Length: 187
Image (cartoon, rainbow, N blue to C red):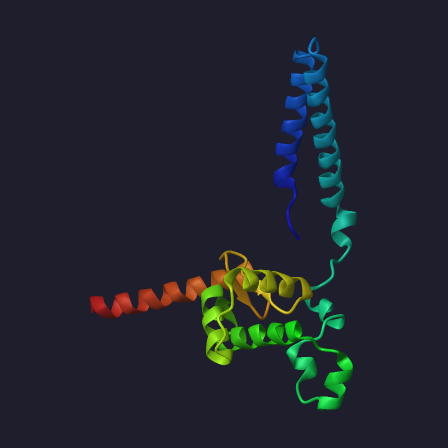
């Protein structure tokens, strides 16, 4: 669960600042009203944050990313299907390109940068995909749950969710490998 408590103090301070500013400029009606409106907005945001961080709200489970697969087809869903059924599914060229992108990411170990995906598309199709179109496609694919953005690296996508714990474990194992080679070198 995301901790919202760290934001509550900031929002509360902003609300208080705007309330003080509204009082300070009470002779300037327009300016005072502007500060009052911002203060009210921050108070509403603070109430929402408090509601979201309440135990009752935390007990509600959020839908898992994989649940979206029930509404969107994946490459796994359509592999091994007869051509007749594929025609009935009404797959578009865009759907096929989505599947191609997901396949390329899988072939690259399950995690790939936009540059690697562009190269993969070219090697498979001999077509030069425009970067902006690919970025838009990847964004839509994340919405469908076909791929996931990397939590700490911009422009990197994976076919399975990558948690921050996964990153820490990879980094710590890399660190252990560096330590092992350092010890060998020191011997």
